[in-house]
Image (cartoon, rainbow, N blue to C red; front, side, top):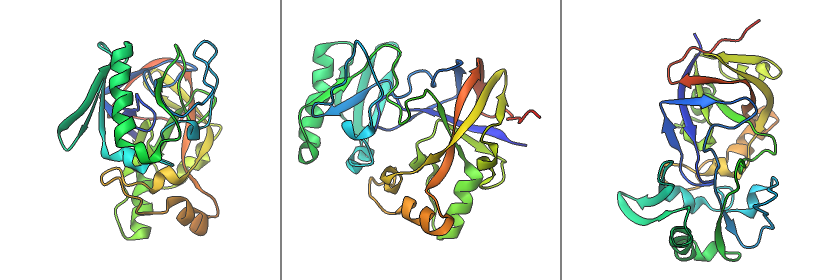
Length: 252
């Protein structure tokens, strides 16, 4: 049986994820609160009044800024408070609705990421916008059996969160998720159409537990499999609630 093993969202692009016991999926949308904010690293041209997709290099991101993985971020939907910790110590906190709150977070990065600064750090957001890696609003999916197979082939454990997905599935044969492109997954009342494979970048080199670049995932994939694909993207086509442990079906 295929099951939904875990659900994650990333309130701030590039920062650590939050595990969710359940989530309400809406047709045509990302998981609520996913990539809700981004941290601009120098002028990006982002227009809050007319938001458009932009490549991740415009913002702080693990592909370029591995040090981000050393910080634990926590976001509260109700208070819009973002706190940043390291080894249990609170380093910064601010209400992202307020200029002072945003400034507190921005000033933290001005100090902690000074060597990687390309310009002023500025927290960005726009109603209804997600700073996703794709222009289309999608949900990213990783097959845990594929992670396990990849780990075995390398002879070392590869942390699943290295791939920064929203949904992690268990019980699906390794690498068979690629065969699902064009098909639909049923999780409760929600329906997700698999639209494409996920091409991996240097962000997957970063160990989420140590913040070190210790495995060149794209190079290994290219050498062993002839591509850099790991995981799949899905578009939510039918609204519904999902929860950890839910069975995942593939309707005929």
